[in-house]
Length: 380
Image (cartoon, rainbow, N blue to C red; front, side, top):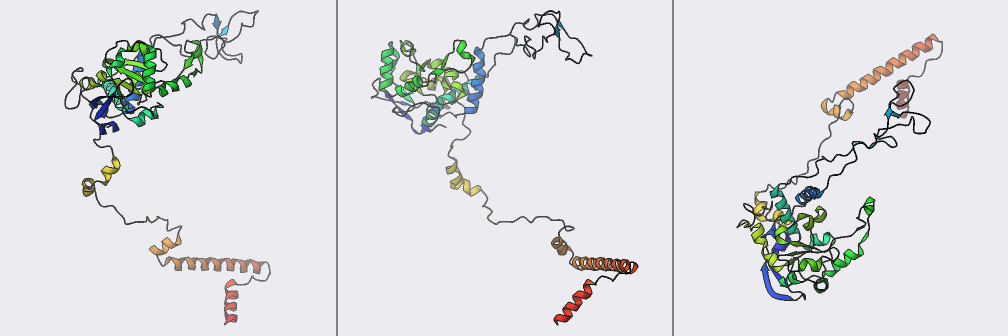
C-alpha cells in the first residue's frame, strides 16, 4: 500500500499554482500494491509489440562459386572460391568466419517478434505504476525534480485542458514549479552512442512530466513541442509511458476530471470497475507493510514462543585414534598401554644396538634408563 494512502484528500490547483478551493478523494488505485517485478516483466513484453520484422537477404554470402578442397592438403575443409588468376581464388567462402561470408544463423522475418500478454496482468501492472506515481520517494528515485511542487500526486484544474498554445503550457509548468523537471530534460540531451546515430535516432534525453487529461480541447498541441513532456488520455493509460523502461515512479500531472475517473476505471475494492467488466483492484499481500511495528505488537508477541537465551556450545567431534585426550575419556587405561608400548619399543631398540655393538666389537651404547636412574640417585 502506498504512503499516499495516509492523505485521503488531494487539493486541486489552478494554472497559477494557487488552491482552487476544491479537494478530491484519493482514488483507490493509489492504494494498490506496487509490484516493480510485474511492471518490469509486462513492460518488457508489451514493448516488443511495436517491432517491425527485419532480416538479411537469403542469398548474402552465397553469391560465389565455392567448393571444399577436401582432406589431404593440410588445409581447412571450408568451401574455397574456384578459379585462378586472382587473389580471390582459393579464399574461404560461405562460412561466418570467412571474409565476404554470411552471418551465423541468418535472421529471418518469421521470428517470433510479438508477445501475447495476459490482460489481467497488464491491468495489474498499470495499477502498480499509477500507485507508484503517488509516492514522492519513488518519483524522486527515478530522477524527477519535484522539490518545488506543492503535492504528489499533482492535480490541476480542468482549464489546463483548453490550453492550445505552447506559451500557455510553459507558463503553467513554470508557475506550478514543474519546469525544473523540463529543464533537466534540456540539460540531459546528448548524442546517442552507437549506430542509432545513423538511423534517425541521433539524440537521447531523459523524460519529463506526463500530463494525463480527460478531454483534449487543445492540450496535446500545447504540450507536444516541449521536450520530454508526454500527454495521455485517462481512458487509454499506457504502461510504456507510466513506467518508461519498466521503472515505476514517473512524475504525473493529472487534470481534475481525469483524476475523478480513476475509481470508475479501476474499481475501489468495494465496487468493481464500471469500464472493465469483471475487474477490481488487486489485493495487497500485506495490509500493513510496517514490519517493525508488526513484530513489536503484543498480539503477535503473545503467540510467539519465548526466545532461547541459553547458549549451547557445540562440542567438536574428534577421532580418539588421533586425539589422546578423547581416547583417555573413553579408555583411561590407554595411557598405561601407550607407555608400555614405548618402553617395549625402547627395550627392543636397545637390545638391537647391543647386538650390533657385540658383533662389531665396539663398546655398547649407554642405557638411557640406567643414565636416568643414576642421575636421580645422584640428586638424592
